[in-house]
Image 1 (spheres, rainbow, N blue to C red):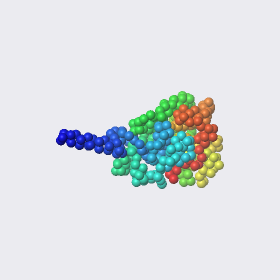
Image 2 (image 1 turned 60 degrees about the vertical axis):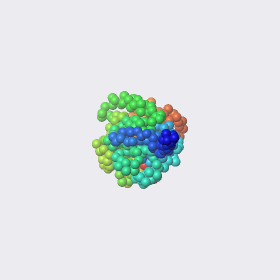
Image 3 (image 1 turned 135 degrees about the vertical axis):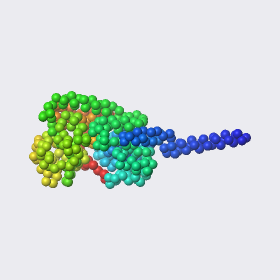
Image 4 (image 1 turned 120 degrees about the horizontal axis):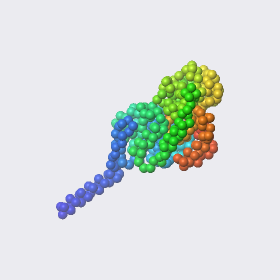
Amino acid sequence: MKRCKRLRSRLVGAVVVLAAALTWPGSSEARTVRDHLGLDVDLPEKIERIAVVAPLPLASVVAVYQGGDVRNLVGIPPDLLNTARRSVLGKYAPGLLSVSSDFYKGGSLNIEELLNLKPDVVFYSGAVHTETYKKAGIPAVAFTHPNIGGSVSTLRTLEMWLDLMEQVLGGENKARGIVAYGREVEAEIARRVRDIPREKRARVLILSNYNDTAISVSGRKTFGEYWCDAVGAVNVGLDVGKKNVNMEQIYDWAPDKVFLTTFTALVPQNLYDNTAGPGHDWSHVPAVRNRDCHKFPLGMHRWWPPCTDTPLALWWFAKAVYPDLFEDIDIPLKVKEYYGRFYGMELTDGEVEKLLSPGAEMRRDFF
């Protein structure tokens, strides 16, 4: 009889433990991953709720990794929500349109709002909030940004993000193949531009941001270094790094090409019409005189930073810089083929045109 009671007691205890394991969030066997800051992060075996704080494009990469299924995303940056509302990303992953961004309103992290989302894991960038997440008891995985100690290559950065994502999320990586194709594009572009003499290489100015009070260029250790190196162009602002400059400096550089990112509301027409900034006369700049100014497109995300459209961005940038060398490259056709191959999407001519010519509404928006 006593033996029966002891056996019954053990069975009841086992059932209680099993029930707790099945119902307690994050109670399944933990695993450890090492993030891009070199930190070991303990994660629950099953991740069902993800909050993406940064980098800005990362939630779009998660969406593509999962083939457009974003039911496990509970928080995304306001900028990503803005992107999804105004680009094909919202068509590819419509679930993004209802994901909360309240934890990052006003451009700063609200940890209480983030905790209210009850994430199993947080994706973030840089070390500034590491201790905050530790104190809050939230598993947080850092995905480094090229401007923070990593590679300036947008393609290499995308590869790093996807590799770490595989360790964290597991499952099938629907973005597999994008980086390999990007390597092929890099190699083909390098082959075409390798024989251009240094003195004949295009002189490119990249305006990473531009408003009434500041003209910010993209030089060394920025994406601008990668884009220009990838297509054999001269980045006139290379030695400036990432700093504000004045018009006198731009006159001295005399760039052949000017590129604007989608982090500014300005478009090439503003430069042509001399309506870019108070007292800024662009009419003396060769690129403006020759109507050779361009704005980075916006597809699954902005094409300026790393994103799953980076191989397309390489084709687009190469043709914009050296149209004669890439005369055979039909960019709208490339976009349609790429979106069919990697996203299973059939884009209309109108959608492609909008993708390649984003307007002022796509400036960075923290709401």
